[in-house]
Image 1: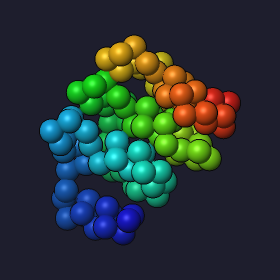
Image 2: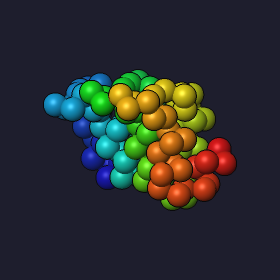
Image 3: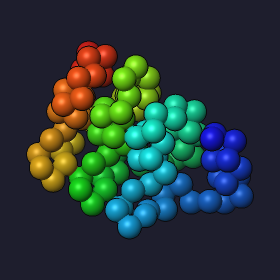
Length: 107
């Protein structure tokens, strides 16, 4: 929830903290289509194009999960790079196509 994210950030939580997979909170917020959390993390200065250990960015996760493409649109607005490829050579367009997310493909 965005209130928890904002509270943690206000107390100095590092928005760039990585887990064992090399992911930040932004990766998870995008994967779970939490638009307000994504915005809070972007405002905090998170690296929007950070790739995890598999080469995935928040945009990869959003493209696979975001049926309405709202988080995809938000990430693109803040200069997420759709051409970044994961370790298998797939970019965000591939993820959206695989899941049949037409709106994300139209962005």
